[in-house]
Length: 279
Ligand SMILES: [Zn+2]
Ligand SMILES: [Zn+2]
Image (cartoon, rainbow, N blue to C red):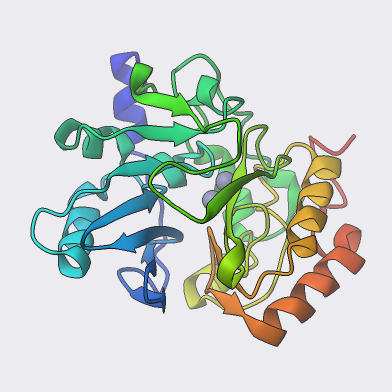
């Protein structure tokens, strides 16, 4: 990557940190959800071995290592990192973490060009919502990072390396190679940004983590038809627990009802009326 791009990425300023920042929730005995500023990452497994799902915001590597040490023991390092997608708030500290950990990184093959410096995402679209986060979204870094050959495509058969019992599910729309992770046994879903439980465009709701089911963050989503299909695909799995890329985890009846509401009202609830990417 170009040096200036690199530093631009590192210096990305975000004037926001939610009240949940720095807080971890043991959603299940082996599934941990941690909030870094405005984004969630997950760690799945135990002290014998775990996988890190997404890597938070830029400059969060030390915080992430501390969080993992607290949960899994000193110098804990994952067996692998799985990326739901390559947006800056999900791969923010990846390069820095990999400097210390020589661990494999897995992503969908359609997302790999954005992680190997070949493609940039379209810039955030401020016209999708009146909320402040949407308005400042063009400031967010949209260029792909480059970790070269350290990233590998997820296995074709749907399995997830080092995560026995889990399958990856292609949930495009928010990005072309977006994935979610599902464990059939207890119907646990790690959603990424295919849908979220906070209205991500609104600064107030992001900061207070007000629970409200929503489609993928609007300012970044480019293919709304695919996004809708992806939400329907996830609803059909009848998840019992969902950890989303933004907002608090949701489970049980609350999750079932909210997902049904989102699917039945997708256009009104999720889709922006005006967007650079809808027409
Ligand atoms: Zn995203
Ligand atoms: Zn996100």
